[in-house]
Length: 246
Length: 362
Image (cartoon, rainbow over all chains, first blue to last red; front, side, top):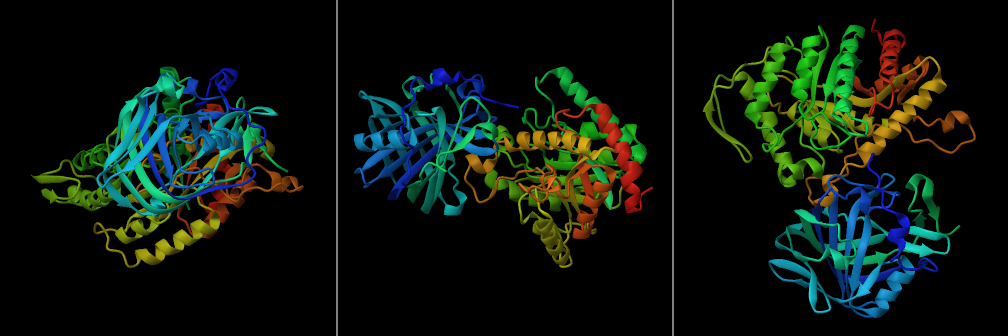
């Protein structure tokens, strides 16, 4: 069966340190969301993931944007790139990297949920016939992704999966299970595009996009839940899952 | 109660050509033995691109080989994917008719619409359209099999008037089924007067509810042809051994392998938000989940209702399904060759000798 083969210590070289996983939820209301799913070349499918995680066939990367007009740390726009995978039998996304335009929120996400995150210019623009997200680093666009020709969906049709963030805890390197609760008030699906993507800057030069899958956007209240579980990155989730408290 | 065997044709890693050939050879021998032992049907899935989980991409060829090597057992498409990018309905009708001829009228014809992004995306299928095309197929195919000439204008397929040749042996046509993965498909089956080929996880109570609803609704059906196939089957695992502990150990390994391979498929729902795919259509059969009781019997890693154990235990398990009101049980015999082939054959023999008689089958 498919299983990640990445060297855990090499992956962990750029992992953030996380003294104490978040015990309080972080809520943001009335946020704009957008996610683009894109198939990636399968050549390095297994080598991109730690042994705890299982690749899916075909490998799919997701680019997601979250724009909040207000939060405890002020307004922010967050962009994440994940690789879809399995943890045990659970459907998950492994965080490759993320960018945000708010220093305080960057610190909070790294310290509480183990986000590998950098500050950059991040934007999400919704228009009548399209939605586009942009990440600009040192004046250069490293991601332009979005969708055109949106069609309305029922909010029940959307399903965004939990994320596994590799971080260094007191107990060692762990995959932090980041769970979000979404209360969608509007949802739509469009034809996806990626006009710019710099895999090097996102931290995984082996990722090569191959084929568009889908794109969706939504308006929702989002709750980043307290961390309940972490998982050793070097063994299967059945063996390596640990409760954070109690 | 009818008993069938159900092939995914899963292949162990490394995915060598030799392993693929071994899996096909073993499956053919298991089908021949099933024929001798009195099993009713050999089912084969249609899947594409599902590495390791299923290398059964041309089931009509596999089933033809089964038909030519057996005398009595029925051969079942479990099931043909009814979307035009994968199977044009004319080709489906033609291939099925030829298989019915070559098998001497032994074809069971299952229909499906695929659940994974791997398959739908691979063929460039719009997931929003698969329920529509499936519905068109199940209405169109009986006409292609029974009418001298057919023309058709539909939403997903159209054709000018043509004579579809040859016609099947069975009058008016082979029994039609639909694979039931997501809740609600049993109602689609009932409304159209076709059989429910259960391939998804369902508890006893859920299966009982679905079966009851199906029976009630099929009484009011608007059938897709002149015949109604009022039948419900469920999917199960089979590993039968005189020693229950051995059976449990070997069988649970097979189940775990199947559940892992199945659980790692990339479901359409995960990648493509749509009302047409509302759930992750896990196919792993399950029974009641096990607790952490101090009673060893309650910690047994095989849930109730799963046909893994000694003959007595399996009789008890199948009786539970019989009480639910289903018409048949189809068995997965192995997964990725995790059980040695000879042991699979021995399990089938023991089942036929010790379990089948409990259900009036000699």
